[in-house]
Image (cartoon, helix red, strand yellow):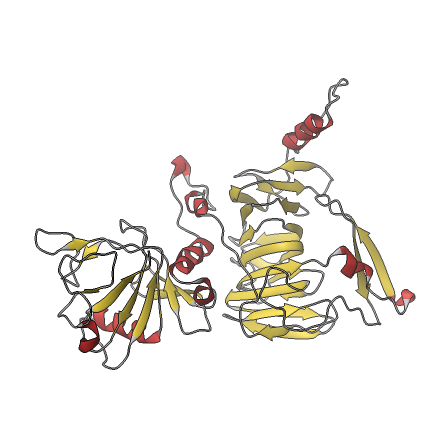
Length: 437
């Protein structure tokens, strides 16, 4: 575009250039379907633009999210790619033709930050390839659903890299168009390059540099100069650098990916008209479910959601024996819930109108609150004149205990819901309600 000759305010001129973008895009490969915060793109021809919801994407785009930004992209094969804050992702290659698979491929490069990728049609056929590359390793995604986070080394860590054979390396000096600091990368062709020791990193904010992965569904193959490691659903992984072998971690090392609730009202991949709400994404359902329990419980719990056929669909496999379910949007209040195995057996008995198994005390969390319910009729669906409809805030429940345990707590039909009380007293499904606020 032509800028005014007397355009002196540099920031204003730059903003005009960003807003101008590029007039026409050839062969869009997808669109931005949800966005909160700022998302920039650098096109393959060097043009820079600010993106918005419904902005088209092209192969060769480098996307950069700013602080407190989440951006969801939907690609032509219905793959979903969500960027977290302070993330830089490049679409190095992308081609998709549903009628043939020989030339179908996607290569994304994560330079820094976090992404959640839920593979669509691409990668689910044997001839397709779907790869995420990072400075530490490449990930063969296939049809998986995963979160990947690359923690870049600081300046001091980059400067401490030792070069024992200068001729054995190819040096690339790169400058991110969104970063002030240059990053020096080296590709090892024969000697040993070490950015960090391959130890299990502590689950804290100051985590060691490297690539972290969490597999929500399916399986991935993580490969670098140190070897190849397979990761299945429910597993966490880490590799410190390109030459350090990937390892399986026993627990979540601190990966957090929680897009804002506003994403649930965003445009769907097909562009719902009239401002209609789209169905919540898996990320949003997981974020809702994890609000039910303490962080240390929720982050390693299995997440499930009811499917249209009356069964349960697993969004994420856990490792600690707890299962969590997101809020039911059809109920009047927030009601995400988490429960342990014994509580799961109790729930199964309740749903099937059976007597709960004796001797199995279970724990359930509803820390976001609970939907209004009858305090006397376990199967009441709406309030009546005599079914004692009550409302309880955030609470925990103890189920499956012996009757003598419940006898030590109030069993009033109209209890004070700010103190512990027994719900459904005198029925096989009586349980302790313990408010936490």
